[in-house]
Each structure stands twice: as C-alpha cells, then as structure tokens.
Length: 266
Image 1 (cartoon, one colour):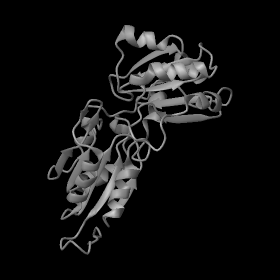
Image 2 (tube, one colour):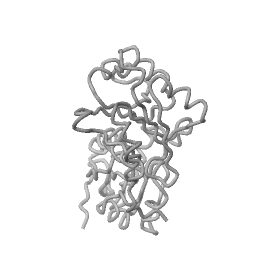
Image 3 (cartoon, one colour):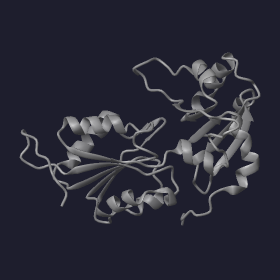
Image 4 (cartoon, helix red, strand yellow):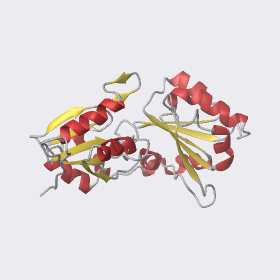
C-alpha cells in the first residue's frame, strides 16, 4: 500500500509523487523501476521529449498530462508545473512526474522536489540515464578515454533569466576539462565556440553535434570549433541536440558503426 501524507490545512490525503527519469528516448534504456511505476500510476505528468514507446507503457486508466517545455513553446511555466504536481497528488495515490533524461541533470527535478517537500507531500526520485552519457555513446564517442580525457564537464548551453549567476564561465571550462558535453547548446553555439576560442582552446578542437540521440532518426554532425557554426548554418542542423567538445570526438570515425543494437523501438 502506498503511504499518504496529510497537510493540516487539507482534509483530503496526499498520495506519493515519483520523479522518474525516462532516459534519452530509446525505450530500451528506460529503467524497470520506472516502467513498473508507469503501469500502476493514477496520474502521469510528462515532458515534451519523452518518447512515444515509453508513454505507451502508461496504465491505460491513468490521467496523462503533457507539461512539456520546448524552446518558444512552453505549455506551462515551471511554477505552474510545480503547482500542478501538488494538485494532482491530492486524492491520487501514485503520481508520476516523467522527465526526459535524469530528473536531477538539467531537468529541474530539484525545483519540483523542493515544491513537493514544502507542500508536505511524500516524494521519491527514480534516476534515468542522462543524454550526456547515452547520446555520445550511441554516436560512438566515449566521453572519457584513458589516453585522451580524464575529465568531463556537463553544462547547459541554455540559461534561464534571473539565475543564481549571470552565465557559464566558458573560458574557465576550456582550461579545466578535457571533454565538455553541452546540453541545449545549439541556439547559443556561436557564443559558446567564441568563448572557448578566446580561452585559447585550439580552433582544431573536434566538435560533435548529435541530434535526436538514441532515436532511430539520430543524426551526427562533426566539425571543429572553427567550423561547426558555419556547418550548422549550411546544413540546417537543429535542436534537440547534444554537443561534445574535445579530442574524444575523433573516436566517432572508429566506433560509429558500433551503435547499440539491443533497442526495442517499434
């Protein structure tokens, strides 16, 4: 039986909320724990980038709510999503907040968990495979390599207004990490590459852009810090995409044919 918590100002009990990471898209990478929760959920509130095969696992009697955010097309503000989760936990025993990748890696899971804790609602996080690890792997790029990269940094290329600090210090990252993995960086790619070049990172530093990673339509664009912006303009390469910057990108030529084959895409 799922335990419930009651707030002093509410007569109706609260159920439990699960912040579940759906992974990067391929349903073969979804966790068994997440699948089990979807199958017994009363309510599922999901992001825009959760893949259709994973949504097909949802209990057919559950209420399914799309709270997805895409650049320029935000269905709900984050504060509204937080309140939606709180409201759905009232009177529903199992509420799943289904988030692309991992809830705590650029997924705003910390904000949602804080809102639930403040509301007195029981909450549990179920980690998922983050795109910054899985997507390069599906492109044949190891983000660390004993002879080339002993350090990796995950960073968002799309920062919200009013942050705790004004911007990512790209120049410091250029000198502090051998591999940089950028989430949501396509729209700010010109600024990112300029900052890294200004920090004396070589213009020949390899860059990989990987679009729709782990999906059947995955595409990879390979260039350098000096060329990648022009290549994006020429090819019309678009988000959603992960960027990998560093010498490990060169392994793509060797390993790209080793794309995982154990997927269960329909």
